[in-house]
Image 1 (cartoon, helix red, strand yellow):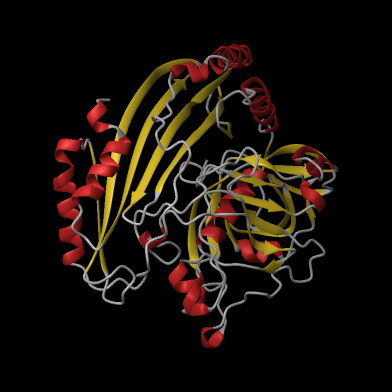
Image 2: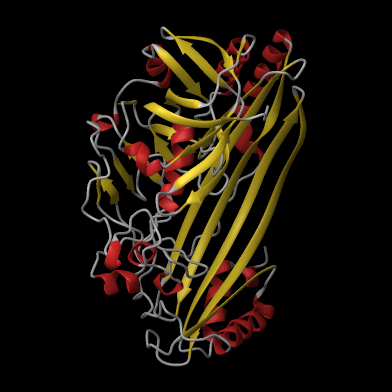
Length: 471
């Protein structure tokens, strides 16, 4: 990267060139490393690098005025010599836009102590301990006659955010994950696991491989079951699939407009009301940019405006937020504009999510929950999740890569796949037992939302609405 194209130089030059009433510039410099494998053999590995520049221009009145309009344009491969074209394109987009319904003053200036530091980087060495362990896992799979497929990815993205109001913020974000799929030699049985990580030092791929091998062994016995409501143990990954969707659906503006499960008639919301129903378990759903192992950007980063974020809020400091506290709806996603209109606290989106359903986040493991199941099902993953009804947040989707029958605390075989119909909000009112909160990876949304910690849950009547032919 040339000196003239340092992220800080791009920010400063864009702000210097701006003719808008206000401007925000975001530069995202990222490096990515990956390994891929199939049939118990590494197939590819690589490292890539890129840089994206986004300019947000505010025109047609003082920043925050009702007439203010905004234009957002982002491009990759921009250097200092070419930054003016991007700035002018952003200003033109603002001129052609109507008044922004989220218009506000830009966030007052402050600076990160490490603003002048270069972008953090990753490279293939991040896999130095993981790759040999993966080789051991391949050898074990070959000895058992099974096949492993999957990939490991690690990215290091450094953001530089500057504004005409004086913001100069920098944040380096590591993000990693492993997805591993095991298949029997004849490919009639399959099992999946995903593991999130910041640096791969905490990934025990040998243990993951052993767990997948155990599931393939369970699947040797096939059991056909009809659709119906079953006592079901949901692993943390599936709980994350459902809670992430609930989080993304928790915009205050949608609730006030009567468009969400958190709405009440007459423009009211369910803030302050219990979502726990008659359940004795009063869960807490929260976010915290400083949560250990889940650290994320400590300020708002918005490339567009929508129901739960605003480009005018870029740089707004984030703190711990309880969305549901002891079973009660405590906060909804807001911009400063929607919070002021609704006379509610400002609670912006945070890029992590934690569910505590057992006291102090402690409790039994997934294995222990399964061991105490008299007659029910053990899920391993969900996929193809889609919304059916926003008013109840009813979701539908399919089970995949292993649903197992549990009798007397023992897994006795694999059952057919199902289509499910469930609302994550309804599930919170029907928790029979909760496990300990642990870092997990959502199969459905993990590529977009990596930082979650969830417990395993026992649901007494999970709705398997129909049998699925998927395999």
